[in-house]
Every structure is written in structure tokens, then in C-alpha cells.
Length: 159
Image 1 (cartoon, rainbow, N blue to C red):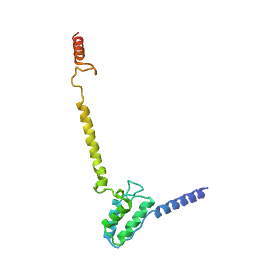
Image 2 (image 1 turned 135 degrees about the vertical axis):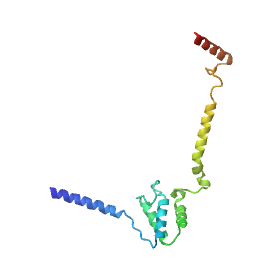
Image 3 (image 1 turned 90 degrees about the vertical axis):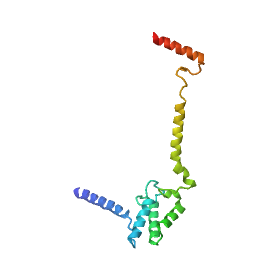
């Protein structure tokens, strides 16, 4: 019984270590500059499937394909901008964490400021719509009725 438990435990340990070993990508570079470029690019490019992870940290199959393509292009001697241009042409500006300022992305850059300005204007407009005088206690009363109501309230306060 005891040896069966240890055999099962050993099998589980080997199975989990094998899968963890297979998930590690190993890339060899001709120079440190190529490796540095590769690391910068994989941190700057967003995984289209995961949306909030860069391709360096994502375990998605698409991210692995993008890492492989980036490695291939770096290994071919392409510079950083050429690789970014290729990825943007293929996947759109969404692949960049910091999209460029252009007409199609203007709403992304100015949208939050617009919402803040509109909110401030709404708050300011509502603050200005306060009753004109404190005597107008009831909406729909004319001036004479409002004065009579105010007089009655003052009389009541004196008593």
C-alpha cells in the first residue's frame, strides 16, 4: 500500500515537471543586442487573445506564435520598427500597449478628458439651477402666494 502511494506520488511529480519543462521557450541569439531587442519587443507587444498581457508573459498559443515570429524577424536582422510595423499591419494598433495618436485613435486619447469635462459641466449646470429665492418653497406658486406663505411661516416662528 505504501509503495503504491509513493509510486503514484513519483508519477505525478514527473508528469507535472515534464509539462512545466515543455512550456519554457528557449531562444538562442547571435548577439546580446538581438536578445535585448527581442525582450523589449515581447514586452511592448500585447497578446491579441489575452488583451492585458504582453506576448512575453502570455501562455496562449497565439502569443507563442508571435514570440516565434518576433524571434525569426530579429534573427533575420530586422530592426525594432520593422517588426512593430509588421505586427501592426497584421493585427492592428491593438497589439501595441501605447497606440499612436491618429484620427482613428483620437477617441481613445481624448475620450477620458471629454467625459471629465462633460461631467464637470453637468455638475456646474445643476448647481446653478438652485431656487432663485428661498421664499419659493413650493413650485407652481405665484409671487403673491409665495409671499403669503412666507409671512405665515414667519408668524408661526414668532409664536
